[in-house]
Every structure is written in structure tokens, then in C-alpha cells.
Image (cartoon, rainbow, N blue to C red; front, side, top):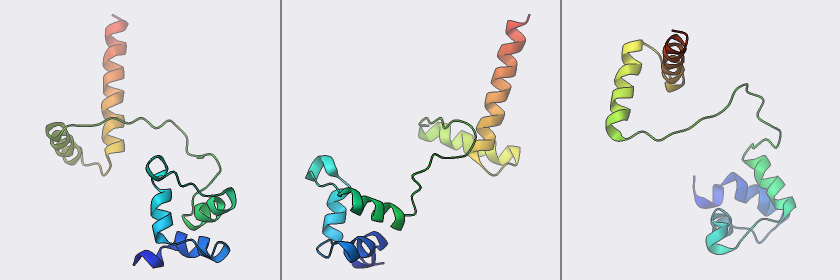
Length: 108
């Protein structure tokens, strides 16, 4: 895909003929370039990116952390050993085991 084939650029350019890939690139870094989309252009861009304005309907909370290289390698090994496909499953198993261990200690 060339820069001019970007679906956002194509969609926004239909309504705003002067919009190009260079402007889209600057929109991605508003603190650096001070360029923002007008509300109508933002709606068009979000639609082209298939972004949903609605709240994410998945249940649960998103937690994140960063793993160092060694820890990531160990996590990959554990995932394979457990026979699960996703890190979500591995982390859920680990957290449940941690919670059960803490609960056992607390109930002693």
C-alpha cells in the first residue's frame, strides 16, 4: 500500500480535497506538529479506520505490564508447556494460582 492508497487519506480527501498523506502523518503526532483534524474529518478518519466510538463491550478489565527479555522467554516456555495458545490464558492461570495461594495463607 502506498502512502496515497491509505484508506484514511482517501476517505478524508473526498470531503477535504487538500488532505494528503503528509497531513495524515502530521495528525499522528499532534504534540510535534500541532496539527489536528476538524471534528468532521475525525469522524471520517475513525470510520475509515473502523474505530468504534461506543464503549468496548467486552467484559473485564485490561491490565498491562512490561516483561524483560528473560522473563518473556520464560513466559513463552511456560505457555508452550501448559499447552495454551494465548498469554491471556497463561496470565489468568498464574493469577488464579497466586490468589488461591494467598487465600490459603490468609485462612490458616
